[in-house]
Image 1 (cartoon, rainbow, N blue to C red):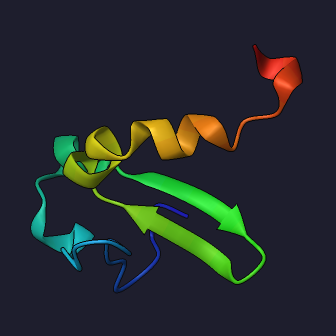
Image 2: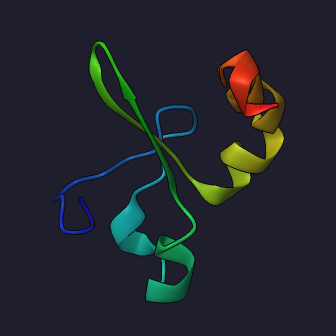
Length: 60
């Protein structure tokens, strides 16, 4: 997963390859029916409520 080429944020289009290694580790990936969906750290922070809303009730 870490070596996937051409990873881009599904919201803003930013490329993971443009980030320094320590920042590239903060990217979020979701395994959905249509495949992997990536979010850069900035978009993940903005949309954290959307991400949390997808967690099963058992998590809470």
